[in-house]
Image (cartoon, rainbow, N blue to C red; front, side, top):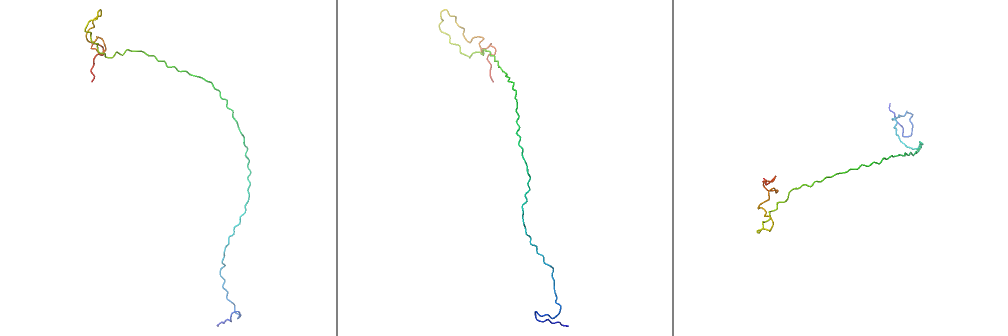
Length: 118
């Protein structure tokens, strides 16, 4: 059987069809804030300590001495040429011998006489 509906707003007496969809859930977040004071009391006690150090001093001194001895050693004389012989004898003076004086440094026969260096 065919069912005809009447124009909008008029009921034909037929049951109306209803389609129910699942509920659409929306979430709206709100935020609020409050402050809670948490009191944690503390106390500082300052104690000053003083230490007196007694230092005992025993002064002592030490002396040092350096002793120096010195010796004079004859190191020989320079090679001085023999002065020329006077041509005339001096009255009362002995005549000196000719040539170097025996036993003088640098003269053959003197210890450490002439040496050749290489």
